[in-house]
Image (cartoon, rainbow, N blue to C red):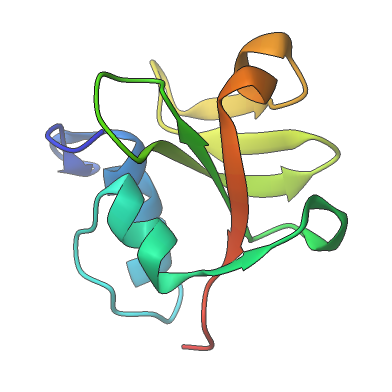
Length: 108
C-alpha cells in the first residue's frame, strides 16, 4: 500500500513506516512502496530470516505484486504500521495466506 503518511507527524502506512525506520537506521532509500522495498532487498528463505529483515505480503490490498511490508522481529512476529503501529503474529492463517517473501536489505 502506498498513499498514506510517511512520517510521525502525518501518520504512517506500512511502507512509509518501514521506509522511515530504514532511513533512520543508516540507509538512505527515500520513500518506497512495499514493492519498491522488496525490489531493493535480497529474497531469503524463512529459515534464514532474522530480526531486522523485512517480511512481505501480497493480496492484502487490491494491487498487483507486494502489497504489505513489516519488519521481522523474530519468533513469528513483525512490527508494522496499523492502527496503531504494533506487533503482529505472522503465523496466523491470514498472514500465512498472504505471505510473499522475506527480504534482507543490502549493507548501508
